[in-house]
Image (cartoon, rainbow, N blue to C red; front, side, top):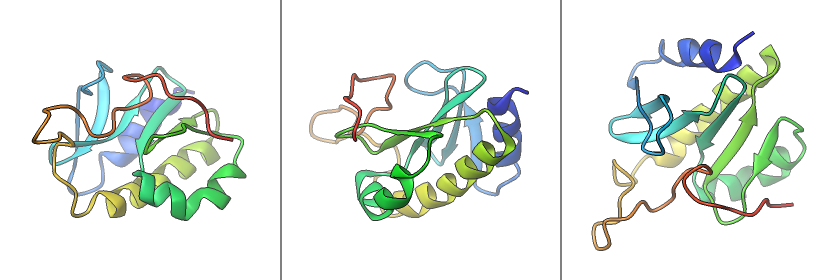
Amino acid sequence: MNGARHAGERLMTWPGLSAGQGYCGTDLCVRTGTRDIVHFHGEHEADVHLTSTMIAKLRPALKGSTALRLHRGSGWVTVRLETGADIDLLVTLVSAALQGAAGLPDDGIDEASGHRTDPCSRSHAYSYAP
């Protein structure tokens, strides 16, 4: 089973989401407007941008999942896509990501510096959060 493909197909049925190439170079990402929400890295892994604020809210639940990897200092969470339940988890996190992205600048670029405000885990070396 190609978890990334199945998850991507499922998310493309949602209004307001579109597919494209991620700014980190991944061939498939899901975005809302010009903001990347999910980057698929291979057939069995995805990064979802929850925002640091949303991660802080959900941290107790997120830390309990063996399918997730948190990255210290990042608003991105890595999801292992091995089972249907993992895909369901990703879909739930995308819903939270859309709530977290509401009101943020559309493209995630700091106007003053021109740099990404929160690059995905493949764009920057983050340490893993416990």
